[in-house]
Length: 415
Image 1 (cartoon, rainbow, N blue to C red):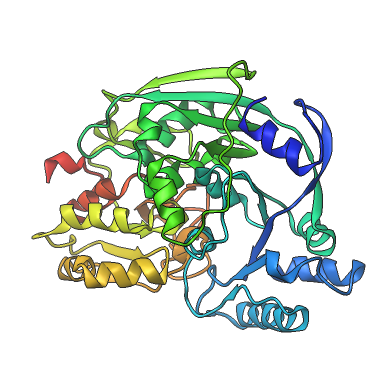
Image 2: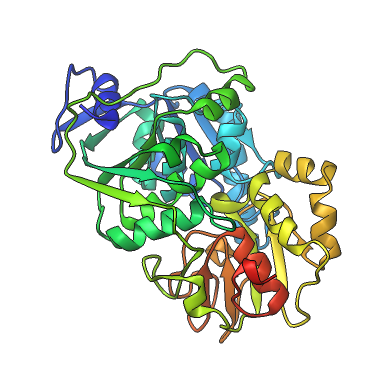
């Protein structure tokens, strides 16, 4: 068996499972945020009086924080009341950050566990060797009530990545290149299992970017064997009671992809699909109105540092607004103490509170007609950041920073 099959077999009480098997699976951690908790709660209250285990449920306010409409304020009050009634202590309401950063930071993620969340980017936690995937509100309500859900065991793609990334090239470029190869729907309900020296050498921040975006080619989950950096990250949070799951030597995969990154250039996903990916040089000069640095994909400390390195000594173009959304309060605090926020402020970037920001087109930074944004977020669908007549390009933090300086999409090597 491969990694995903081994984890699902154990969680479902089976010696082994095979792709296509339908299994009932015990859940280790379940999560919802301020946008998805209320519909989950509405269904839950029709089927149960008490949650299966309040210690295994995590609630995070991140999509509309602070509340920007009466509707979002109402949603958040529903969640607060539910948490009190059900004695759920793991609730983060005071700007702690984006759920997919907060859960790892607060020690809710362990290797070899099964994690679900009412958000499609729950697959992020696969960077820690967990099976993690998103569910709809109805399915998550059943988890809150029973602690279990059903899965079809997915087929797996083995993604081998080897080589050394060039200057200005990061894991965001790699995952965009992989999505271009596989296609937006090419891995629908598949498991992407990452291997190779490039993956082994990546920081935790970089690995989280990779697994965060596997949903953009339709994958059920993405998963990696924890490396030394991951083990250190867990140890720093006092997490030592876990097992690392590795695939059998004769594990079977539906497809195997091999990527050599030695010549990989900065990548940009062009409107309106994440697999519409080009080298940055091919679209250099495209005018922009807005640049966004942040999100559950690239709002981590490492990402802020990369952008600050480009912006230092420069100013954001006067026709551009550069919005910065740290992925968590802890990242924000570290960036302040290390002088990164000051560098960004000196460049005239607008620093916003930790949260999802404009990524979903519902909070700060929403775009109107004919605006064009370059962003470190994970989706560039039609109307994703507001108007259906706006345009979103996706890239790494250095490309965003360079483009903000020039007022047009720019290779950071030109700054």
